[in-house]
Amino acid sequence: MRVLITNDDGVASEGLWALARRVVDAGYEAVVAAPVSDMTGMGGAIGGDLNGGELEAKQIQREDLGPTECWAVSGPPALCVVMTQLGAFGDPVAMVVSGVNPGLNCGRAALHSGTVGAALTAANNGAHGIAFSLDVTAGPMNWDSSVHLLPELIERLSLIERGRRVVNVNVPNAPLDEIAGVRVTELAKWGDAAGRLISTSEHSWLFERQSGDPQRRIPGTDNAAVRDGFIAVSELIGIRTQESDLDLGDLPL
Image 1: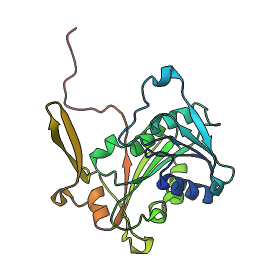
Image 2 (image 1 turned 120 degrees about the vertical axis):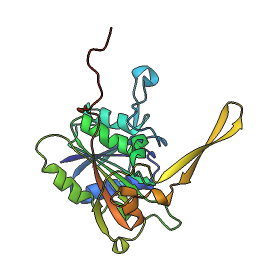
Image 3 (image 1 turned 120 degrees about the horizontal axis):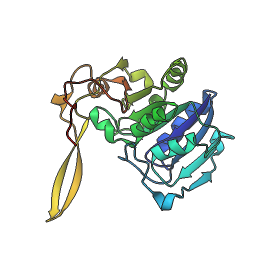
């Protein structure tokens, strides 16, 4: 199976290469295509009409990944997925793995995550998607813990015969032997981080990130599971219609 590795923090991020090494060590054919710079918070954006429609990628060398091709793309992670599926870096892939993001992507706030956006874009372009995020604490980053489930998840997704699925994985920042287990969770109503605006002038603000309110961590949701020491695994559904009680019939012209 051919697997694309991407992220939203750019090719300088250690989490990207931890994920790539895990894919290669698991025996999969891999290609890395990730933003040349930090594209955090881009969601599923592909960047509009970048450079008049001219897309650029530069090949980079990674001796630790053997013959795996690695590309730095001048655009966000969803664009990396689209370019890959259109043949920019060889054959299209069956699987996209995104991350590892330093910082959780829990709750409905995951809508804004470029890490999760890449996985959702994969499902819109013929591939399964998995997004990996690792909590940030005062201690060192446990990248090995963050990518531990990857081979098992790829194997299970590869058994799906119809449709394309998206899985969001959030991992406590702890050694694997200190993680309590794995929980399948719902999305929290809120993310595990919050933000506020601080006015700096009449029409200028500073956006400040803050820790989420512990009272909003509801049992059964992803941010609660991570705070209880579990890996949270959630299956996401992308853009789709639904039947509802909203009356959209007989709209006037």
